[in-house]
Amino acid sequence: MVVPPSSPDRPSADRACSRRRLLGGLAIGGAAAVSLVACRMSEPTITPASTAPTRAAAPSSTAPPPLSGRDEGLAAELAVLARLDALAGADRSKAERANLAWCERAHRRRSEALLAEAPETRPSAPTGSAAPSLPPLPTVASPTSGAAARKGADRALSRAASGHRDRAVALSGAESLFWASLAAAATQSRVVVAAEDRVELPGEEPEHGPYQPLTEVAAAQALLTQVHAIVFGYQVALAPVPAQDGQSWVARLEQHRVVRDQVAELLRDRGASVPAAEPEYETGDAADSVGAARDLVARMESALLPFTGAWVAACRGADRRRAVGWLLTGARIAVSSGAAPRLWPGWPD
Image 1: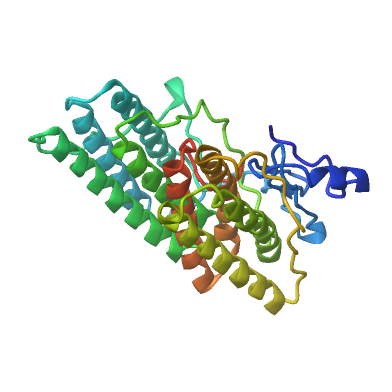
Image 2: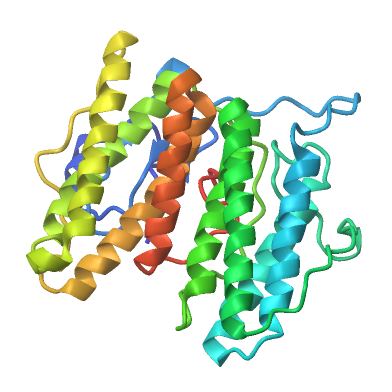
């Protein structure tokens, strides 16, 4: 249950109640509310004040310049579709066919979005009769086995993710976020394609509106507030996990601590306030079983993606390379832990 703040400044009683809520949802309000909340965990709320997101400017009558890297990115997505088509033709289980069908639809939607005008400001392509026609898919050799078909699809997804990531690092603002989201999506698809059991698949996602940017400071403050909660959540999630089985989560906890420290240092360098962690966060039954702990990790990592995406768009220079890496890692871990893949992971809803 997502509970977005009703206003940037919450009443004190509501703030007290918010400490009983669990990390897991997203709300980025047009007026400025930025928080990550869901039932039963703390609800750290950012009040950006003068650094609030601003609404996108009205469309200009002048056609925007082409999206940088569009042709290369579209070629990579078409190669993915060709390989997914070849994999679908191999002998697959019912669960694998469902996973592949979702991946194919998602990559087709993204390919169509690449043909839309200024997709980096609104990454949703027209649907139905208004949808753009994709070029023919490249011809690929028929795989000799199901394993070969899966390997070919994974290679195409890996190449797409790498190229999209490089474009995200080289650009800035909404263009950087657009390519980073495509890279994260390809990263998630690698997990879905490799799965032998059916993964959690999402329903139809709402259309994304025009991107509403945050300032560097506001995006960093919003991200740091959520990372504080995730650091706490991982420590709780590790409690029921045997030591020999929890090493990947321990490593991920340390990664979040590095992010926390780097973002806090940036805010201090900018002379901005550094959000502090809450004394504690309510985590429900996450400490009672490995399954509950895994569910918490999946929800935390998935809910963090839009905040990391906003940071990708807002940060500068070398920080962007790190931010894009954080987004891709979080996208992979979210789906690997049981969260549903997203059509545009990291894009603020």
